[in-house]
Amino acid sequence: MFGVERRVTGAVDRLLGSEMVRWVIGRRTLDRPALFEASTTGVESVHRYGHAETVSFERQVALDPVPSRLAMRPVSTDTPPWTVLECSDVQLVGPEGLTFLPDGRVLLENSLGWNKRVGVSAARSVLERTLPVRRDGHAARSVDTAVSLVGPWTDNFYHWHFDYLVRLAALSSYTATSGKEPLLLLPPETSDWMRDALSLVGYDESDWRVWDGRRTNVDRLVVPALPRETEGSAPRLPNHYYSLNPDAVRWLGERMRSHVADDVPSHAPDTGRLYVSRQGGDSRRVSNLDSLAPLLETYGFERFRPEEHSVAEQVATFADADVVLGVHGAGLTNLLFATDATLVELFGSYVNPVFYALAVQTNNEYACAGFEPRGDDLHVDPDRLRALFDLAGVAPVA
Image 1 (cartoon, rainbow, N blue to C red):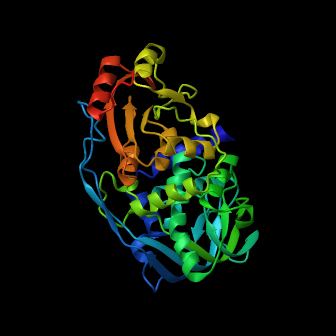
Image 2: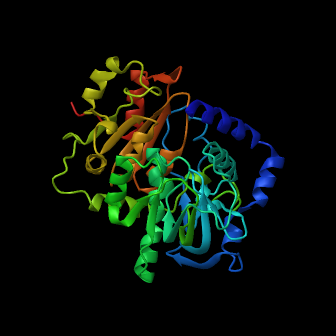
Image 3: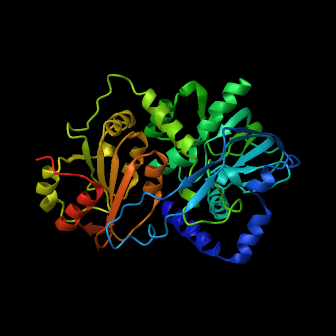
């Protein structure tokens, strides 16, 4: 089934490259500008908290040649204030929770603000034998007041934190001012680590329900908007997708740090220097790691594999980190919990600016360099790595 799903969603993904198809889907979705109009059917109220904030990417440190996707910077992006909407008579459909308003349009905000994901989610819905349209009176479930944390990529460590949990910053303000505590709907594939992360935000099992993916009516859906610009709401700057409201990002990091129990161990070494290893993965591994061991020891780095530790241990460990070294990967999401650190990021053939943006949003320092790709892995030249350390101000400890 999984192979069939990948082929079908891959075909849909290619099909959605068509401007005509994008236009058709766009007519069936409700983007952010329309969503914030008081006259929109099903949208009862809009609550704004805090203020908009400009994210400026001007602290980039990179060893020449600069990886191409990071060479686009510096640019500045305006991020929206925390916003919560209350929508009535909503229907959730399919495994990624397509959200239909009373007029039959899809609420784009719950599809990560991206029209393309609506098409992919619709394909997944068909594969699960659920027609991706609103069908009044034919829902399998009914819920009174809820927040949907269902959508694309929920089982990805980065996306769970920065597409879903970060939205709880706005929800916390809504709860404090309204006194309402909506039920959290979690995705069907919710794992233990997803629950653990949610618990560190301050929620427990009485606050959520794991949704079964079946068609569900929600009398009142509370929607914490994505704390970033979305497709159709602003000019598409090269970094707009990663430019979250820094206040929301810092709220999430502080909130999760504050709920780590005192007896949870930190695995940060005395030097405070972590090498985040991907050697247990199937891509972006360092092909010559053994030959780098003496250099890493000279600079005081100790290996840390996030997947071998609980979420709470990852939080505690990165909170104690001074320097984090690693190849681009989900483990670097934990920079969220560092308070005064430098991230030294290594790239092979795959380059993504997401952790550069995270460093800026959390007031941590950042440096990076590209290295020779070896298939999906990379070869790290020791002299180039030493030069990167010098550039980042990371001195030997031995």
